[in-house]
Image 1 (spheres, one colour):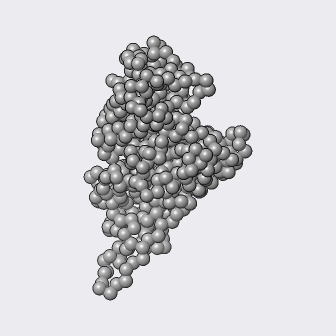
Image 2: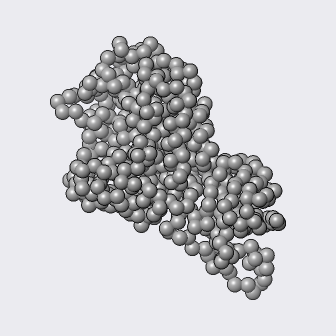
Image 3: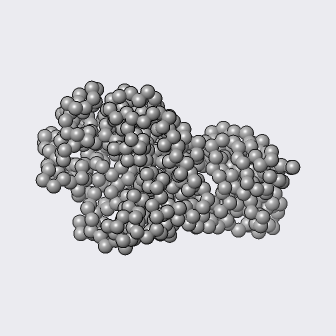
Length: 504
């Protein structure tokens, strides 16, 4: 057995090692590497893991820590088998915490009793298990939901809404924090900053709940706050301004705490319809801008988010909200900005009979095909983890086979900084095992298998990418030549080192 190591130019460098070593004054420039659109090198592929009401994890309250851990690992392993690379885990469903917090009580979804200590802090485990599999961990917060009940007296001692009932508004049988109060914004920002400071999260994530969705016959009574802080604005404008202010404050706080942490929001899929605004989408559904005062266009224009992840839970061809129409509308909104666009897919809808399109096993795969057909969409996230496990109509297997046959690195966001770590050193093969010395600043490593034909461009796309690993070792399945690169936590990639495996 022999091993060799040689440095290659990085992705897109446009020159093979042989060409770089034999440059002459008359040498013609090497042809640029052309990426295969069917095998994108960088693509976010995620799944939402909802904890509220025990939708996804834990499957029910009161399970032992070991059972909770086993359930979570099962979800991650299912995601890893399909080459997903990110999880969006709900850590604050309703002013509660699935982590040890001095600011809000333990979530009832862990033990069955709000405020009860489960005897362990789940968040380090949740994060570590994701990172072991080369996945990003986005901590998902609901900013304004205070309680699923309407009584502050029934909340556990120390709950912010119990200590500050003046922060809350009863609406539709639930309790919400008033977005118009500066004290509420300060509290939400403090909760999020606390998590970013103490835990190794890769992202902070908001879902689509801002002002509550309309409830027939109910009034969201924020009139006192409007009189105090409205300053002559119209009510709708003031409400949107309150949300925009919170988003900007959270964005600033997150990046001040840790510059590499991403902040993104998953808005309702329709910003506005053309009937509301000529620049809106050709749709006829609820308008997030008008109904829940969420102005995603403003977040994109002002750069107060790193990504938007609109929930496009309609199929292609839907009469009121066609998937393709909306995907293209959102693509136009982020074009020319530093804000990345991912699409939220309604995996939970697959197999439902309320729309016959969802009875077709290939609908989700077709939606990913729509995403790939444009240049602006950098990935997909699926709701939710329960259906990732049950795999209705084997739809996720179809997605994985058609689109995720290879792993993918994370899309780069230049505004977050970061830089490529040193290339791996001391790379060697021992039987089927590749190993190398850990690189300073590396979070993970990418492993490529060089095909028998072709001499360069092997790291341009994912055609030859076989693994993204967190540890400096990899067990190969066949003999051949391999390339290994180092990745920082944002997936800036080093030059490659070559390792030859003669036999397995």
